[in-house]
Image 1 (cartoon, rainbow, N blue to C red):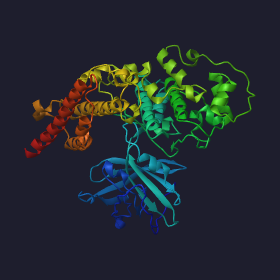
Image 2: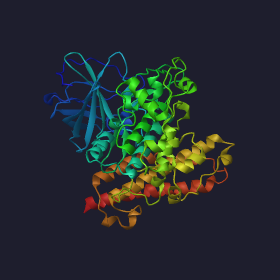
Image 3: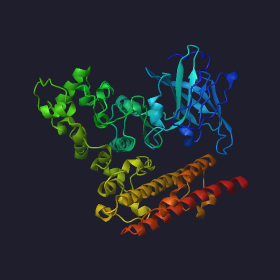
Image 4: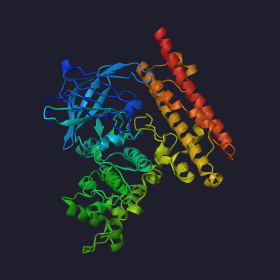
Length: 530
């Protein structure tokens, strides 16, 4: 999409749901666009309308942020570098923050002035390591009186599509450890968006799965088709890219569930395992034919489960192709079993994303000494958030490995559901605190590797090799997460059998993590003083 000259700016009132508002500083001499909001809490703010064409290489995107709640004002500027993606939605361009050197991606989409942007509203709801982060947002206008929404996000240089293409061009299959690592994170991201916000992505495919080439962290991106599904509310069926489209969508269902994402994720899994598409249909009808070739002809009951209003049952009868013949002989049986649980005609029979995470196919990731092939640690895999809400203790025990519990001094396994049966609220509160502490501790271990000094930094901090910028990031990240955790501990009902000792261990780990952050700050200060 070609960049357009900009004209007058219409006034857009702030979103009723967001009460804070930042006035942008626009650098008119450089034709820049102003970006709004800075630190993560400011994501909740309304987006300003500004002038400029930030997608053109070399243009400066500049704004003044802060000034609210006692925060000092500061200017943040981005320089547009290159377009990295185009489509019917608009463009995505890469930009660099001039103050910090950080590279970001800015998605610029045409905005209908009559409506709020659903993608923006959904991205404001999400905060998860396997979901792309919304950093800022701003609107811009053109001389044609067109309004564009600009979403500023973390820049991740690779996608799963590019990774797959690399292996395909090399005539190689993706190593199984990467298949496990990538798919586990995909399911974890889906478990998060499906659980609390009940967001259905509706376009899961390799192009929308970002991969950090250094850490191998995977993030779901492009929520342009996503929607919060409401029971009884109709949705469009022509959604999701063809090769990854669930059969109920092909049958024209308008009341579907988040299980369409599970089917799509299954298609991605099969593609990683096979090195090629599992269902390469040339059109919608042919797509169904390709599915029937593998799963066999759906029964009348299965068709009713997919779309109760579908009445044409005239399909050629074909038996299912055995899964062990779909994949090559050396394929682990756990991989085949997982695929069989994802590819079910009846949406309700497909496993959930969280159940997929607990599948034995991913057990290797839960081993105490599991590492990347280059010897570096995996990205944090057990820093769960709301995706564990409502999970049974048995499922939690499968998801969080024993060595993680032991590492933070907790008894394993978790107390059984019967212990907490009399007080579901207590168990939910307890599990929430456990999740937070485990998440922080997992991330802390990762930071200690990146900083190249151990978690007991007090003993060896003088010899540490570290980055001041990384320490600043660590402090900002963790101190905000420590806020309020002390009061969460006080709110736990320690009278429940077995919980009081666990809480004491949680507090100990929490204090150690706070000490680690304090030590990191001291290391930096000592270096500056010298």
